[in-house]
Amino acid sequence: MSDAAKKFMYVNRRAPYGTVYALEGLEVVLIGAAFDQDVCMAFIDDGVFQLKKGQDTKDSNMKNFSPTYRALGDYEVTKLYVDKESLEQRGLGEDDLMDLTYEDEDDDYNEKPSIRIVSRDELADLMEQQDVILNY
Amino acid sequence: MAFEIAGKTYETDEEGYLANLADWNPEVADFMAKEDDCDLTENHWEVINFLREYYEEYQIAPAVRVLTKAIGKRLGKEKGNSKYLYELFPYGPAKQACKYAGLPKPTGCV
Image (spheres, each protein chain N blue to C red):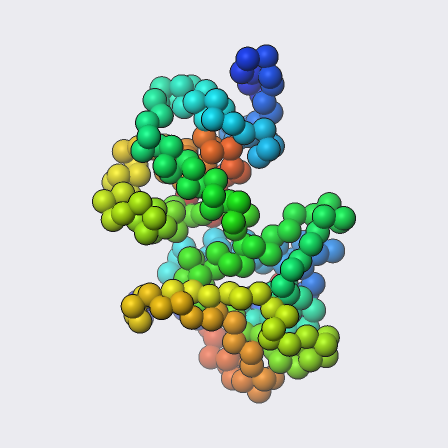
């Protein structure tokens, strides 16, 4: 990654279905990943539901796009920050989220988890470090 | 738009991508390739089948950079490079191969 790479954070605050924000936001991340930026994603409020295991959209006539989050590692999007407080408020824990991993090129292609549970304070620090923050 | 093979009609979008993923069969790929004056070899089929599996697993058609890397991992380094893939699919490996595979046009950089 060059020194010119900017730090981008995509903030996801909405539930995956019901509005088009989550899917559109994910597509923007995948498109943006081609431009050699330092990309991370944050999942806050109902946004944490986007990473929930075992999504089933059969009865809602919407495409279940949750498998696409598993492709993020291929696109070198490897930092998915999840707000701990938002999880707890919804009765969720780390075990309720999908197992998302990436292969670390700098460490013999070992598989590592992409999801990192963080506190509000840590999230605030991370936001402070970004050049660009986009909300979906 | 649409085309017909052996009496069955296949709907496509304005760029010739299959409208319904479920309509796909190997004859569709052969038909589309012939329209482009391209004969599908075993090497083409490797990429087409790989794309169908990728879509099945991730519900997206991969960007060309991701496709190239993944092909290299699956089929070997000598195939995981743009030169090899562009020789097979001169209209752009992601775009052309996805079309033959019956997938939607890839998201983003193709």
